[in-house]
Image 1: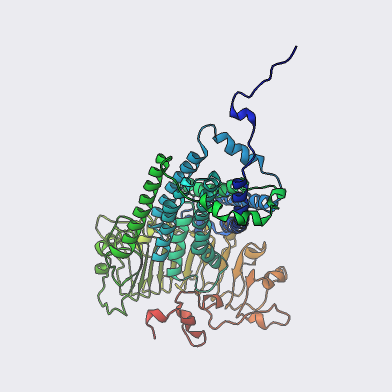
Image 2: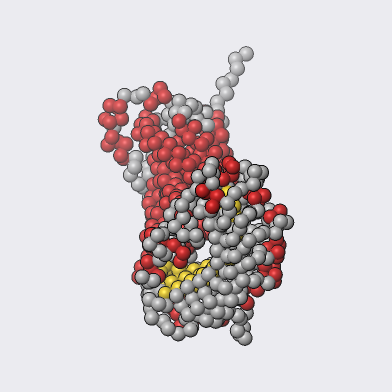
Length: 622
């Protein structure tokens, strides 16, 4: 009995069609450019995410809190995963003779059951543009360089304006290759290249202690860039992850799509060149069959033009002029008033002779987004009224340098505390004889506290209880004769400086209660012996230079001195036969690392110290 023939019931049962000659030729033309882009992107991204993982691991907890890093431990691992992901992508790209990845092919084919490939490209581009637009808006509140702020928006706008037009190409190979190619390039720039330039390089300079990285202007730029490009909230995490992963996925899809077996890639190049005009035809656009895509293209282009106009207007044209005391400023979208970021007032240079500077700190003139306040050589005998600081609830740093401040107490006003956002308070070289009363109640996020160059001599225990969250405490040259026992309650302190006082001994039970201590600076005091046990485990750096220490106990490992875990520069010990090498100091209070660090250090302002390598030039002392 003759069997009847069984015919396929639909096109899918016929199996995949063989690619046309035009398809093969287009893929061959795109193969090497795509391969080159993929290798460059994977290499650079792998390095970038490895670097970010390193920064998360090496940045101190205090600095991470100061930049408001969200879940830093988890995000450090997350950055490592992205580095590994790009390492995998690089491996797949280098194996050009390998077959297509079933993982990516199956994932994309599973989506075909719900959306056509063109609709997938449109949807993914829409999500990507939405996340990039949010990040551009977010950046306008943190980037203080107009070129960087506008440059970021320009790339987002180009992605909106340029990419969707390729959805209208006649040939599907052009649609499915050029759209991911352009989208991946823009995503690569926004998620990797741009943050590398604005954040990663300056952060590395800061972490390795490069010169001029302690200046307040550098610090302001770095912290703001960190808050912009590091994850600071769940929404920020989602949008950054979408941009990062979509850029990676677009590239992997592109590489897989343009994959052509090696035997096919050996096609005679004369065939391709002879059909150049025919290939160009496939890049032509058609609109009448894709009205929804055309509507999306117009909408995306209009959105790109709109955000570019908003950013340019806010940054260059509609912004009110800030006072000359505003060194750095923000340009948030949809605002026109001055929004100062970094405020510097030198009363000596501006001939301000009064006791108050309130007229320079008006929110109507500076805006309410003020981030850092640097006050130099102003009288301020009673400090700055808290009511004057109250409008600036985004204030991160407050430095009062070289003033005549003799007290600072809350006045009988509605504002009785410092702004909650303050993380850095510094009062250097004043007429204080006691710790200012305003410091009895400090913001919970306070990380860095400096009192230097005064005659305070004694600090009540109540202050140390208020400073329990401080990680860097500097009490230099304030005439201390004993180390307060209440310091033992500061379990979060990592860097403690007590140099230039009149200290002769340290409580024997003090160190074990400071589990996070990394640096103890007791230089330029009156120690003849020292708390050697502090540095015995090699985890704490003990700075003892410029003390009258003539010898070290036999129990102290000499390697600790050789490795600079214990520093004995400018001490009688240095003249001892067989002593470890010591470095010279130009002044007992001026360490080599302070010269040229971007901060004006009074002990270094001498000919012997090279006048602090110009750090004090803008102060007008000479």
